[in-house]
Image 1 (cartoon, rainbow over the protein chains, first blue to last red):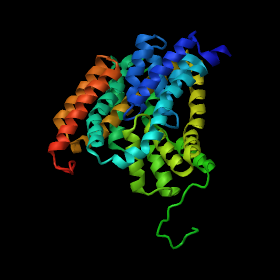
Image 2: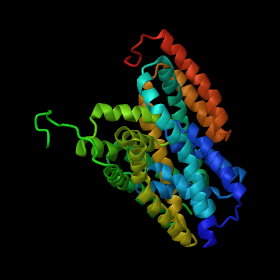
Image 3: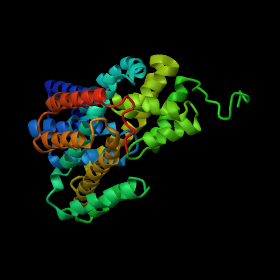
Image 4: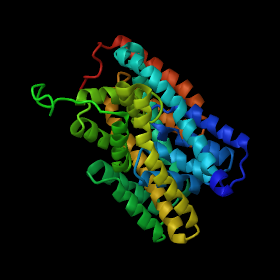
Length: 186
Length: 202
C-alpha cells in the first residue's frame, strides 16, 4: 500500500515538491511538446537524483509510447516509477498546470497577433531548437543500448517504417519488443 | 441535419461538456503514438465542430504555446464552447482513461521486470521509442525550408541544441533562454530584411 502511494524509493515530501517544481519549469519550456523536455528530466531524475536508472527511464517512455493516449502521459509513468501515486501527482500536475494556465490566458492574444513580427520571429527562431531537442531526446533514450549493434539496426528500421510507409507506429514498437524479448539487445 | 439550407457540410457545436468529454476520450483511446492525426479526423470530419482552417489555426496556436499540443488544443476548443467547464471536460476526457491504462501497464511491467524476457522487451521498445522521436524530428525538418532564417542558421541552431542538451547535458532552461534568445533575434532580423510574405522561396 505504501509502495502504491509513495513508490519504492523512500522519497520524502521535499523530494516530491522538488520534482513538481522541476517539471513545472520544464512545462513552460516545452515548446514543441512535452517530449522535448525528456533530456532534462533524465538529467534531473537519473543523473542528479539517481531515482531511476537509464534503463528504467527509457522503459518508462517506451511504455507510454506503446499505450493509447497523448504522449505527455510518459511523465505520469516516470512519476509512478519514482514515487507511486504521489509521484504521478507531482509530475503530471507539474507538467500540466503551468502550461494549461498559460494556454487559457494566452490563446486569444496569440490568435489576434499571430501575424505580428514578434510572434513570427519567436516561432521561426524556436523551430530549429525544437528539432535539436527532439534529436537530444532520441540520443538520451538510447543511453542504455547505444553500444549495441542491434540497437542501431532497430532505429534504422523504425525510421524507414515511419518515413517511408503509412504503417502505424505500433508495428515498430511490437518489433522492438519481440527483438528485445528474444535477447537481441542483451 | 437540423439546418438543411446552411451549406454543404454545416458545422455544429458540441451539445454539452459531457459530449466534449466523450469525444476527446474516444479520440485519445484511438491514438497510439500520438493523438494529432486522430484528432483531425474526429473533430473536423466526423463531429464537424470546426473546419480544416480552424483546426490548423488552433493547432498552430497550440504549438506556439509551451506544453503538450493536443492538451492545449483540447483546452482551447472546450473553452470556446463552454468556458472553463468545457476546457476541463475536454482535457479530462483526453487524459483520464489513458492515464489509468498506462499506469496499469506500468504496474504490470514493474511486477514482471525481473523476468529477462520482459526486461528485454522493454529495452527493445525503448530503442524504438528513440527511433519514433528521431523520425518526428526528421519529418518536421522539411518545414525548415520555409524558415526565414535560412537553412544554414537553422542547422547551426539545431546542431548546437543537440550538442548542448543531448551530448553535453547542460540544463535546458539556460540553453532555451540563451540559444533560443539568439535564434529568435536572428529570425527577427531576417523577418525585417525579407519581404513580408517570407516563406515562399523555392
